[in-house]
Amino acid sequence: MNSNRLPAFLVGLAVILFLAYSSLFVVNEREQALVIRFGEIQSVKSEPGLYFKLPFAFMDADRVQYVEKRALRLDLDNIRVQVNDGKFYDVDAFVVYRIADPRLFRETVSGDREAAESRLRTRLDSGLRRVYGLRGFEAALSEERASMMTEVHRDLNTAAETLGVRIEDVRIRRTDLTPDVSEQTFKLMESERLAEAELIRARGNEEGQRRRAIADRQVVELVSEAQRDSEILRGQGDAERNRIFAEAFQRDPSFFEFYRSMRAYVSALGDSNTTMVLSPDSDFFKYFETPDGNRTPRAGTTAPVPAAPAN
Image 1 (cartoon, rainbow, N blue to C red):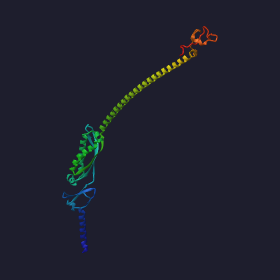
Image 2 (image 1 turned 120 degrees about the vertical axis):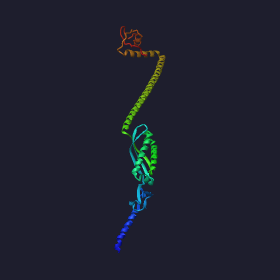
Image 3 (image 1 turned 45 degrees about the vertical axis):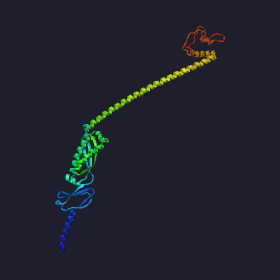
Image 4 (image 1 turned 30 degrees about the horizontal axis):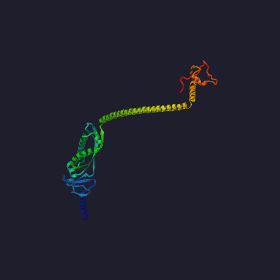
């Protein structure tokens, strides 16, 4: 009797375990679950834990669909945008989003992340083109970049709300010139730098000439002042010398006359290359007289005479 009931007990236990397994599902902290019954959403489980549902999911009784709860990232690379001056640039951007309304997410894109990201990518592409088209390239490299991202965030979030998605952040990773624009820009930058260098060089030459002119004027002024001072000092010195000579002459005129004659003899007779023919009775030989009253030079002799008497 017991042996006949054992298979039935095991079968019943297996059925109970299968029903229990089919009726339980787990939601972790990184996801949220949708309980779908015959194609209709019955409930949304957002908190982690163990939950129950109707078994026989293969009969579409109760089926669980999991969607991400954590923040997700969508990258968009090599977007070619045109700025307001007509030039094209390559832009890399990314979006951080979160599935905020799992029910709406299921209803609009059937819970398919790829379909949702495809729509977001299209909207992000158009948003970046619009924002860049209203500005120049320099705006993406300046403080205006934050306001640009705010505009893209606002445009993208409007489209994301219809998908049950919330945009948390929009960032631009790269903004580069396209190859043809890069070459044109580098040539323009090179010509601008050369023009700036020529301008700086011209200004430097102008400043150099100005400073040289100032220095030359100062030199002329200093030399003029020095010559003026030297003439004044020379005149003062000559006046002082004449004063001293005058005082000396007044004290002893005969000695002063003798001293001047001796200076004249040194100047005239010290140079053997200059000779003059003079009479022995000339006043020039006044102090060449001997004690007997005769002068040393004889008539017809030559004696060196200065070209001009010394002062």
